[in-house]
Length: 157
Image 1: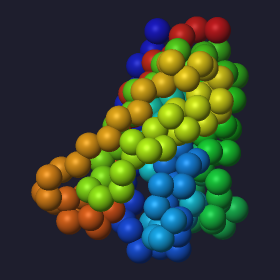
Image 2: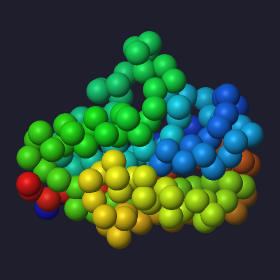
Image 3: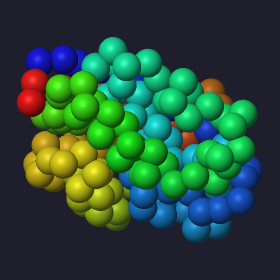
Image 4: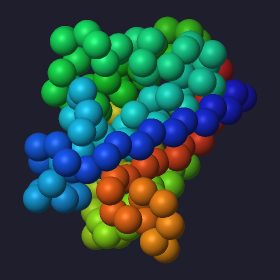
């Protein structure tokens, strides 16, 4: 078993929509990012890469490379899952916490879990998605952006 931890945050203010796990959660505003800015997909990718000791998302898909401008973050996550598989591991489980003040995750939670599970190659029961706020504290509490924290567990193939 290998365990990895991933984090990502983005500021609101880019072209919409905001996506989490490939699911639109706020059609009216987006985040400032090189790719589509899906913080959940990015944090999941970093957690997987960390667990397999394969670097980080920025090493594989550098933000200064124009090929990744507007990229689908779930496609990037799928590429990471393939790389982790090539290293001899499979995803066992993933636990995610989304930190956001005003966006409500609950209505889309099950769809987010299903989409993540499909990309990760696991049953939805192996994927946990939770959401919390900072009760007005910091940039997240001022609704200036959103973040995600992910713990991933890998098993040998």
